[in-house]
Length: 294
Image (tube, rainbow, N blue to C red; front, side):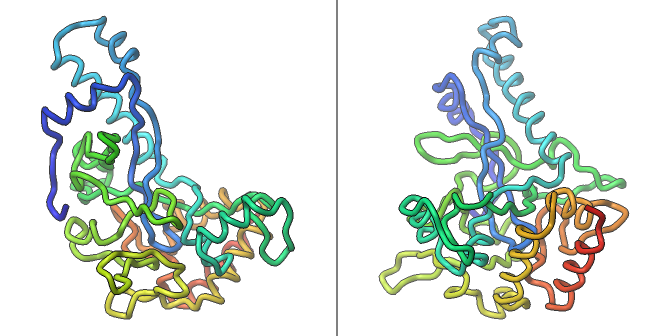
């Protein structure tokens, strides 16, 4: 999985078995740097047939499928950021594992203000960017069609590359406390070693990988340990999600508007996440959000 692959003709035939396939992209959280897989569209074979006027030529069908997938990838790349639930950020916010948070949400209908179930209040969303495995080569920095985020489709229960450049098959963390999370190590080669997740997978003694709350498995300094203390991260998330009206638009303006730059190092992926910055930088971001008109 450390090499770049392109979809084979056999995989294309496997994809065609389903009448409607989900299309997914790899996203990375700009706050914490963790990776997740999100479904962003569908490939409707009936729509494909209408596009090609029910032609029996396979190359026309494949070209039509490519057009749909490329359009989906291009639209998400152009949007630059999407606000989605990040299980790692929520673990920081609640100081609990994701499985424990979900357990509370199902078992309890109510909760105290200090940290009740997810159903008590709207879930906090984090800014996430679609990951590309190749840098933009154009002068203006805009990615070409060949540089768009790779698109994945589920084949035989595995998320498999359908278009673009990326890992052939994704290693989805299937632990009980994970929701569509992706192991960061599978991207280490493609992203030239610049992988600094706050949530790491470590062996538990029997050779199996485990995913725990970041408070218990923070990476060592060699692998990019966060500079911000957990207390500072928790305070920032509580402030953002509880006290900032329309925080999504505020964060979009402060972190992703071209004229303002960004508080995270983001190129074709998140090279250095916000929580990997210094406490002073996090305070500066919080002050900038405070100053933004609501």
